[in-house]
Amino acid sequence: MCDTCGCGSEHGEFTITGTHDHSHDHSHGHSHDHEHPHDHVHSHDHHHEQDDRVSSKSVTIETDVLSKNNLLAERNRGYFEAKRIRAINLVSSPGSGKTTLLEKIISRMSGSRKIFVIEGDQQTANDAQRIESAGAKAIQINTGNGCHLDAHMINHAVKALDPDEGSVLFIENVGNLVCPALFDLGEQMRIVIASTTEGEDKPLKYPNMFQTSDICILNKTDLLPYLDFNTEIFRKNLEKVKPGMRLLEISAKTEEGIEKIEELL
Amino acid sequence: MHEFSLARNIIEIVTETALKNKLRTIGELVLEIGTLSGVEVTALDMALESLQPGSVLEGATIIRDIVEASARCLECQKEFIPDDFYCACPHCGSFSHEVLQGKELRIKSISGE
View 1: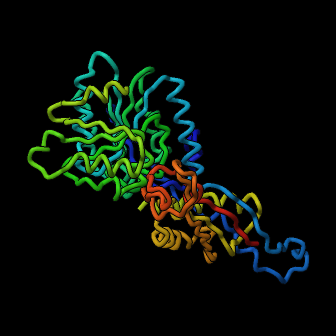
View 2: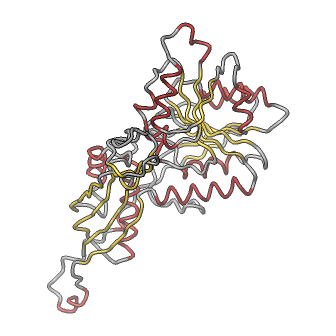
View 3: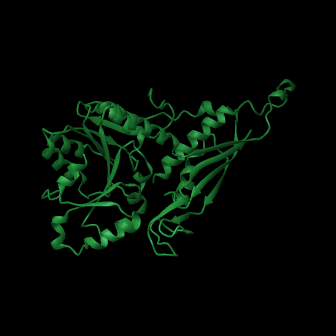
């Protein structure tokens, strides 16, 4: 039972595995039976139950569907602020180079700033292992059938990871340009990564994700000589979706431009 | 795919409200969904349908109030109906606008007994 979110209620299933073999199986049982005691409603033959009859009534809720996620996200944000942790949510499609970029940042910044990573994937702990090999403490969230991370998962992962005060926390979201857009995790900055192998129209195809992000990184610029990708068209498309959004062109492989990301941390 | 978790959130909030208000069965649930909310309505319908049996929403009618988007151009200040996030202002052609409505994703009300 979780003392933060009271998650005795259903909230999907996910697993967290980390550096100390800490395994947190978070599957909640679906025990609905106490919520709708229909069985005694039908016994109308007893006169003394007449008083118990209820007539139809309407209840106004006016609540955001994501209200619980947003509340937990604010809670996470408060925790990050109090511990002066720079929390960054990295979103992109699969294969844009998020993990490679993190590996490079970790090795470049070793000694200057402590980095922690929460890795989100449907399956495997491959990415967390890559991050650990690069020298940062990481924890893996496997979302199972889920297509995104939410504030609830981050809340649990942060407790297990226990990032140092004043550190940088990267949250590598599930590779998906649709679903993670809706879920605030409590991050201070959301960075969307696109790469030159993906086509210039990515911002137009997935406007929600680009609109909700603070900064856009264009990765794999080292491949530009071999591709038909036109950076100016990409920039114009980005400008249509989010006017004024900052675009950082980098190559995680050659490390060209990575210093611009380090300045943000 | 995130519609499935949204459907779960809806059922969770509705279940809590029903308990608080001593509703045993829910006949009707009203949702408010904006055209720019990032939700695929048919996917949300399917997710809700699959989660309804055995939940407090079993047998309930789900009504979706769709909120059409509207925006105000940040250049010429005129209002228009955007068909997407990156639509240009029909009056001056600028892409800078603020969305006035259409991002709603709310549970409005339930009724039951």
